[in-house]
Length: 396
Image 1 (tube, one colour):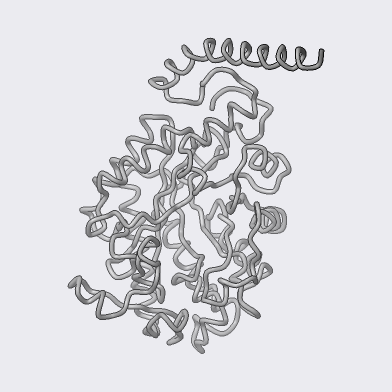
Image 2 (cartoon, helix red, strand yellow):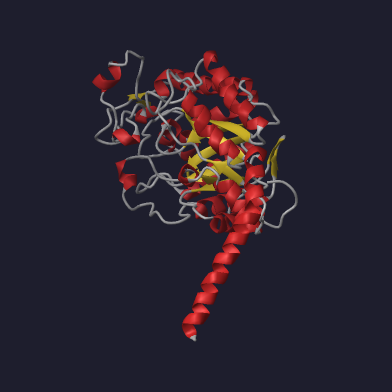
């Protein structure tokens, strides 16, 4: 999507030293297709589709900063240097086709190791994980399980918290070596940092618990450490559950405070999600509807004065355009709609601009589609004419 346009969704956006060609981002979506954290052919094709489909930025699935921090056994990882070449292959393909590539760094904490969604998505039992013969642990701020189906996590010591901070910093260095353009820190959905933020999961009495300032400490320390090694010309995103969905838990007002602090240490974009802390959030505390998280993005954008990314049941080009044009968010992230149609971003431009050419498609595809288009228009005109004539005859 290039050139001047009055369509807000199609306008470029520069953040630090990177320019997104439009405002559409592909959200992280766990694939459970890696082998010991390594990129496989599945990822090459999976992410490659979105690159060709016209999105400006593609974010990897939740990518583990440590071997025992994976959401699922087969998640992508970036905890060792050997992971770099596979990740670089993804970035290089994106760059060769006009897109940016980013990696979402994550530590799943007390929600480590769950089944793939198609196998139930439930917490794996300790004996199941041990069969894989890998080191593992579920950890959190306090010895409070995410729900009855999860084992009770080990409460982290201050030294272990610092170790996890360094794991994120090392992962950021590897992401840079892999030629990634954007880092996103996953601070939502009940994973490690989100559990520290919430008073429902964090009942510590040291410097990492109790007051809001203390509960935010790990989030700020990780972001600060990552920003120090992540190149100044590359953007840093943070995904937050703007509300965790629990009663008296993490609130939108808390998010506004944290967003301001994260901005101070060099975070550029808040990716506004919600929920995920515990079983309680699967109920109606965060009602789902089209664009149900967009108000969070608008509030954070206005009150914390930081770029935001909206996500959650955004399904049509008109809806996405309204989000950006109205100032509710600077970026729109889609996930499942892109699974339905990887060319959703390219088609969105075509629909919104009323264009007949397929200029947002890769040239190897565009040439064939443009060649066919006059024939398609003629056939459609003839079909409409036939239908109209039949209608007139029926009225005589």
